[in-house]
Image (cartoon, rainbow, N blue to C red; front, side, top):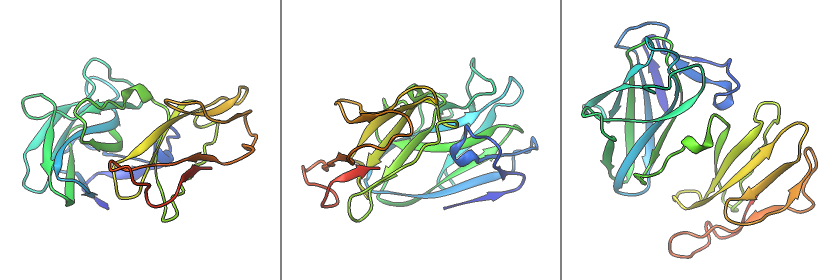
Length: 233
């Protein structure tokens, strides 16, 4: 859940963004905000990433805040690598060190405040792993799927929009456990989906697999979740 206030608004014109949509402010204001309410399952420390475009040396700054009344961390995004491409960047605190927050199980809020105009924001990522880095995924499409009540998850990719190495993570609904896969696709080349640490079925581009691509997920206690296998279809 979320809301946009002031000059922030949604645009739907960039296929490199999630669903081609992202938020941006056309005004160098310092008062426009985007708020996101989210739920975490576990009481632990979380770290934060943003997928953004900071186009040049005059358009790069924003504030990141966890909870209403929390400290506002000013981030000068993508120093030394600003440009027209989507990139992941770690959220930093006021000391310009890796930002983190201890969150209890339940609902929480992230508040983004625009400082510079034309800084585009696609995704917010939070993780309990301090060393996690989504950057190796590059600028390609990244999908996180949640299993349904029967343990199934599925996604479709349009090769013309999502060529290259695309990472798909399948998670058990309601828990952090999951598996990551790499789907590679070029219009004139084979398209395969491989589990990152095992071999899995492959098929030429635009050809259906002869049988479902099945993955059985277990939680940290070794229990299947929810109660049956997960299939990426």
